[in-house]
Length: 56
Image (cartoon, rainbow, N blue to C red; front, side, top):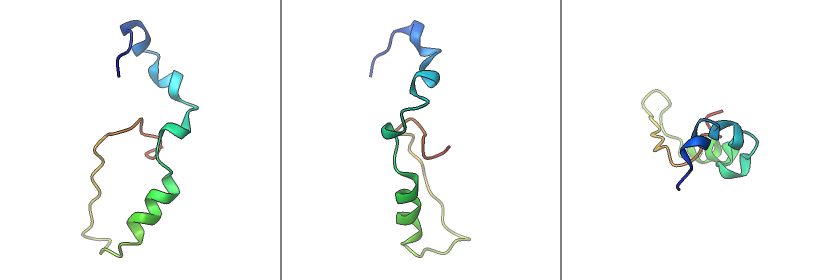
């Protein structure tokens, strides 16, 4: 994705209300929990492919 450098500093503001661009946090959590992996040894790696709406 290309963006004008002048808009880059405003990108987080422009995307703040666009939750549809991110994953469904409830579905993500449910998918992880459904694996029944041990909680004390399980690590989830976020590859950063998205705008971070799930993190919020």
